[in-house]
Length: 174
Image (cartoon, rainbow, N blue to C red; front, top):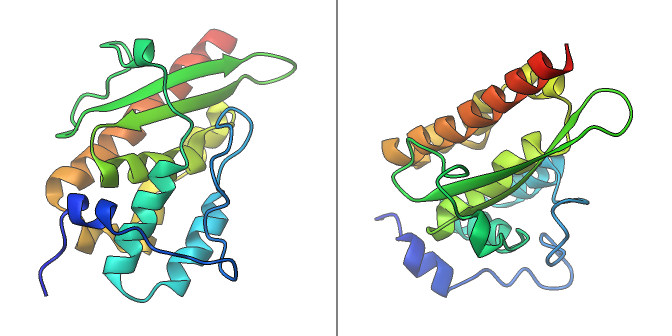
């Protein structure tokens, strides 16, 4: 069976229903988002990749909208075929800096992948970011076998950008 396009999946969202609230609606990204453990649990419940693709698209829909002014060259992630932007906010209240992100993409599935990346990294200290192996999580989800090489490269580019931000924040804190 051929893999559906992101456009087809976006036009047919999964109806998770009240008994399976996989997505709890839009949340303020700067405050909270779907956790990686919730995403992992939901992926385990979805046996078919068509359903998993739809779920990834739904995750993208939960992202807080990024202001148009933040769709800038400074926030654009290089190395992605689709356009991807990551806006960074460094919270320096208290001890170690906390890196928070807002993200967006012009492609439905990629926007969902952005949501997964942000669930791993946003709201973490630079050291936590550097200690997190996103590629292992992506492999656990099966992305290596079910994403195109271009999308996989885009995922790596997002991770590299966030890890570079973490290294810079650590250097500034020293």
